[in-house]
Length: 232
Image (tube, rainbow, N blue to C red; front, side, top):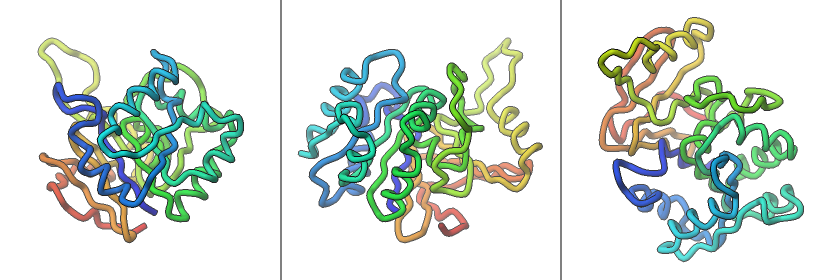
């Protein structure tokens, strides 16, 4: 498998996907066309979402079409040179994938080597389930089980900031609740500007600052450009 899982679509006040384009171009070497999956988008139309992604990919010369433009989503996936899944609401994204019965088709294509790029919600669904997403459950998918490309949970947009006067749970407190019930399942926290890269069966954490690895109540730092200690 070839995976590029991005924490977010922007870093600070950057243009859409701009900070990540060097990684994207490296992941898509030799690719001429890309199939985009916009189903995490809720606040704007899929056509608007597609246009935003096309503009971001303009410098690559890669033709970007969206799965919603195709009459047969499975056929579109079967013909795709690469698959790209955008951010938004993870529950809505997974709901649509189950409704269209394309979970297994995506799995088959990616496990056979078709490159997969996802950011935010699109990265979330590459893990075992969406149980550590930050999103509000605005719709109920058929299952919380996700694509399972990595044997772990993902938490994009990771941060543990608690503003003065805030009395709700911090991110670490939320993840601790998950670990209490799922002590053998790892979680990887991806701060803004970071990503996971899977190639040649190795998972590497990349970025400018530490990421975090959670397991059985223990939080460990992931240094930039470090190899995560399991193989796929």
